[in-house]
Image (cartoon, rainbow, N blue to C red):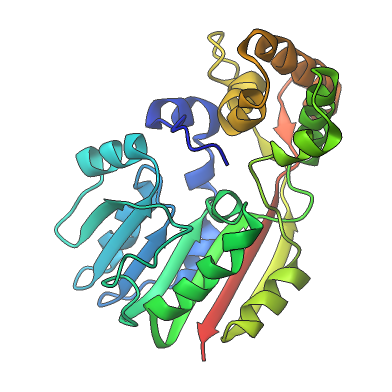
Length: 276
């Protein structure tokens, strides 16, 4: 994933405000208790982190994220006495002894691990560190993109990068996401010392926000924000052509004839696992 911080709460609200609203199931799996100590990996702008803290009234919640822009928003609008935030590359928690101290009741993540697990060389470390953070019997709960998530976008971006002059390997490498299967996830977690309770895949077509007319909403806004690393893989002069090609290619796939609304083929992977 690109190290450039292209996130902002404002862009996220325009392009994908539906994400934190579609969390009823994963939050029910988290089952927050009043005295829980919860670590939120990839907390974004803190909307869910603060929601968790509102239930863990006598506990503690810490949100970690690599985006300073997101954390600025979180600290400004989602802070509480039992809820704090920290700038942190979640692929590397080795320098956070207070996080990896085996004291957390629960480790949580929503819509972030498909970014955080992108690099194969640090993939297992993320889960290994989650295991270290938890107390014995503690629970890891997360939702992320699963195998086949936004496949139409993934394929269209790869093709557009090929047309822009990249090799197939380079176009594939530009993808900022990792969408695992339940089988890979369950096997990996089990090998790292977790007992997997749930590992489920749900196909959930998701309605995009309306087009705002300023390139921040609708399909284009989603592509510009979520697909920014694809665009950064080509020279700046070619980026508008790439975004137009992707929009044109997927338009008839994502647009519903009855009302013109646009939907992406979201596939969600939800997991509950306990530390042995």
